Length: 205
Image 1 (cartoon, rainbow, N blue to C red):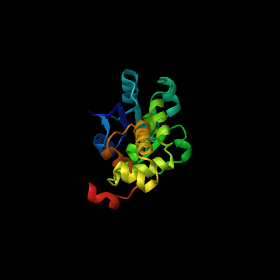
Image 2 (image 1 turned 90 degrees about the horizontal axis):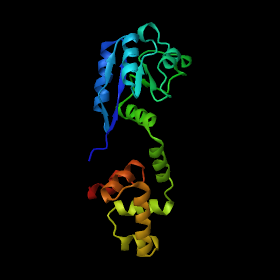
Image 3 (image 1 turned 90 degrees about the vertical axis):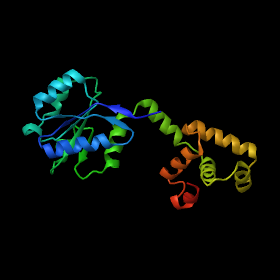
Image 4 (image 1 turned 120 degrees about the vertical axis):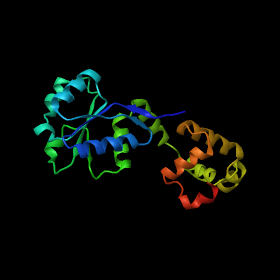
């Protein structure tokens, strides 16, 4: 089942190379379903925003001779739901960026772009789930490490001086907190969160 997040994103940039290049990059981002719309004038951006209420507008602060973001926000207020990202293709002063929620640089890689988009579009429910995941105890982290190394419940119990029942209870709590119910999923989690090194489990993959 696909968990891709669908986002309505507008790219406002005068340069066709930068504009089309960024649109191509956005389409390639993993776990995000993006079909970017490219605009080349403030009028076109205003018309699109009025009709379609985009989730995110990525715009060069120098767009169309100098973009007036405060005025645009006032004209297209939608309870603050649209997020604005400054697209930096030249040196921009911090003063021009203070009205934006974040910024992209033409030097940003895929991971940096995806991280910023995910951060801006997280719902309160998702943030709560992430916060809960961060409350894993040290013992639970140790058990995750053992699981992804292929150890059985009995082996984990012997290593950590626990009963098998306690190990099973910890594993149940880990699955509830992380919403991960398979060793493969825990392996990915452990690698991403640096609980194990790839070379420690490469023979098990």
